[in-house]
Length: 181
Image (cartoon, rainbow, N blue to C red; front, top):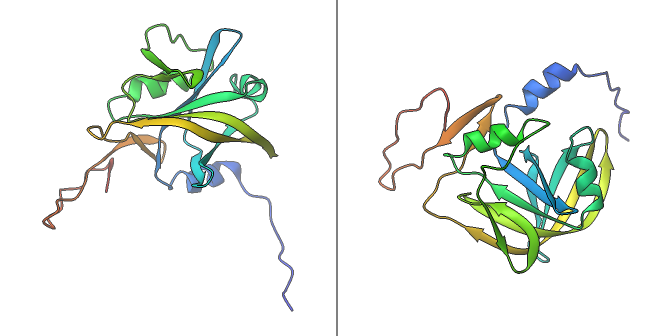
């Protein structure tokens, strides 16, 4: 017989700090509604299934792009490379001017991706679920691309960092305060 748990209210600031200790990649989620492109920076991204190929993104309900994703049936997830901090910062703002961003398209999807990204996934929205102050959007991947020559942009404790691969011969590089191994 299990003992019932007592839950106490959590301090939101402390909760965010704890969640910030999880190293994540940085993505930009894009969609297009009525010929206008909408996007935002997201680090709540995960693979969900290999068969069928599914991913999920969690979007705050207060985000400007949220209502566009609710009505759209397609979106792309651009996994940013370490030379794309400015793009991440641009898409993290509520109002963003993306006129200077190079976008690419594929025949399988009307939604663009960001040129120069580490990887991109084009998705058809299959489901969405309410989760507190966020909505989880599940997408079936219809196409993807990856640039193996690039390294990922990473995020840790509210800061961007770098990923350094270990040498195949066992030597380690020196860790900097913002370096992730």
